[in-house]
Image (cartoon, rainbow, N blue to C red; front, side, top):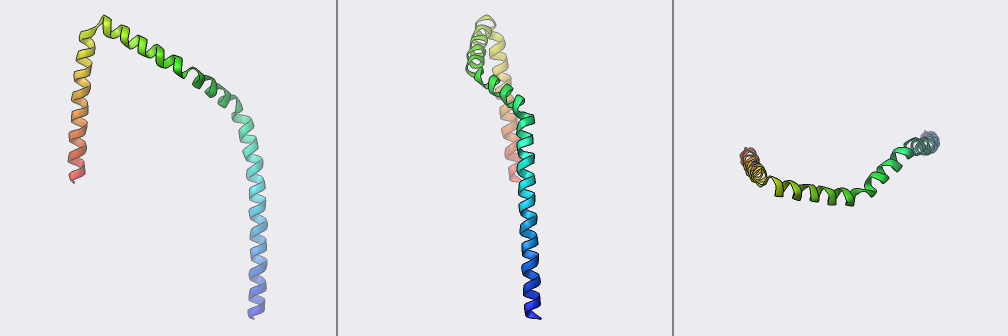
Length: 98
C-alpha cells in the first residue's frame, strides 16, 4: 500500500508540473500579446515624459507671472491652503487618538 501511495503521489506531482509548465507557456504567449497591444500607449507615455522638464519650467514661469500680476490672490490662496492643512492635521490627530 505504501508503494502504491508513493507511486500515485509521484504521478500527481508529474501531472502538476506539466500543468505548471503549460500555464507558464500560456502566460508567456499572453504576455507577448499584451506587450504588442500596449506598445503604442507606452510610446505615447514616453513621449509625454520627454516633455516633463519643459512643463515644469513653463509651470514655474506661469506661476511667477501670476504672482507678479496678482499678489493679493496668491496671498489669499496661501492662507487658505495653510488653514486647510491645519484642519487636516487636526482631524488626523483626532483620528489617531481613537
